Image (tube, rainbow, N blue to C red; front, top):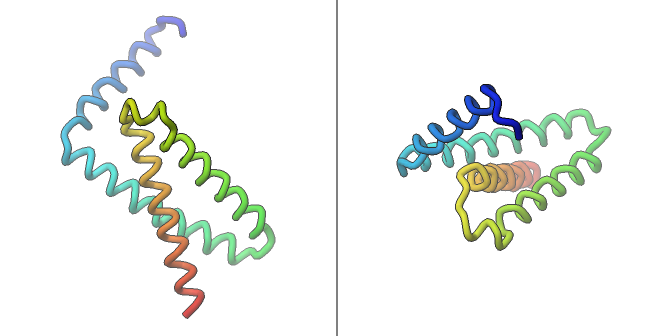
Amino acid sequence: MQNTRLNNLLDAIARRLEQWFINPWRRFSLLIMSFLFGTFLGTAISTTAGQKAELDIVVAAFLVFLTEITSRIFYSRSFLSKRSLWIESLNILKVGFTYSLFIEAFKLGS
């Protein structure tokens, strides 16, 4: 990329955020928020898709595809060498999403 002022500004913001999240408590709180947002997303998507009852299969296939892509990114060998916060929070979001779908399935079964 070119070395523009906007690019330099975005790089500086990214570096400062990365340094801010080095603190373990801030990192843990971000991961907890990611898990809770994934739980919310799972409930919201399953409720919305179930209410319309038109695109259930398409939505389910798309969500499985996104979940598998996230797993592929997180568990690849190149990720094991470096622990990126954004990829880790994406994986925790996926875990919360999957957990929420299991909870919704238990609600429907009872």
